[in-house]
Picture 1: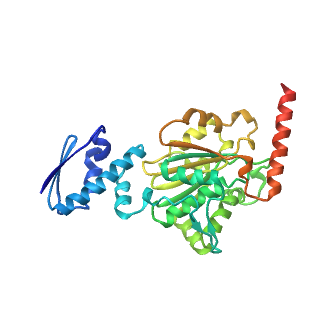
Picture 2 (picture 1 turned 180 degrees about the horizontal axis):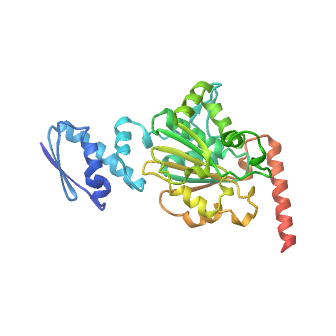
Picture 3 (picture 1 turned 180 degrees about the vertical axis):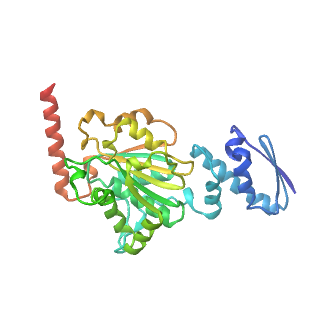
Length: 318
């Protein structure tokens, strides 16, 4: 049997890949099917059942390209393994189970929006007050992806800016100085991955936690990469981080513009970066509010009190 598939309103190289790399990977799943690419046409020859299956899977590949900026061979692997974007959980579904057996799931609509954005886009900004679960949810999504073998690594990073303290006065070598600063990331991971397994992941590089400066010069691919406390980056640092993005990576940037620890608040590049990038296909901004705080009820009142104080001070200085 013969059949011709014609690509409509899409550049063939976006589906076939450079040197037909993606197409060749796709065709490797159909060893009994002859496939010839001629421009925007694919000519198939083989058994009717193989051609029908090829049609279904190839339609999934095209649909995925419409949702993503670039396709890679990993998208082909995801389609045939049943993982990846097709396994989007319902809004109230369990993302991952904690080490104590308790389910971790989105606790409000904004957290649900973050979960939805993760499965639809490759770069997400999650901004808002402390206690809204921005980083915790991001790490839960990363752990889920690792357990489902959708990614090979989790990379967590923070800018090395102290909240009124000086790392240089802490005892120990560089790692010992930085570990307490990165402790919130360790805490979240410890809630989701058993201690021994977490140590193994840290030892073999499956999970990496490092200051932002350590990201320079790297290409981060087939990974979920989370930049925490992004309000403490300047615009140049934010650009450096975002341009580390490999073709099959997920990047999540979290931050709270009201908690800037830089010597000059105006040096923060988080909001400026969002203004530059918001609206670009493949990028989503999820904005958390005071109402989304999930810590102790007093935290909401504390945040509101400080926000009101800040607004009053700004008005008096005008």
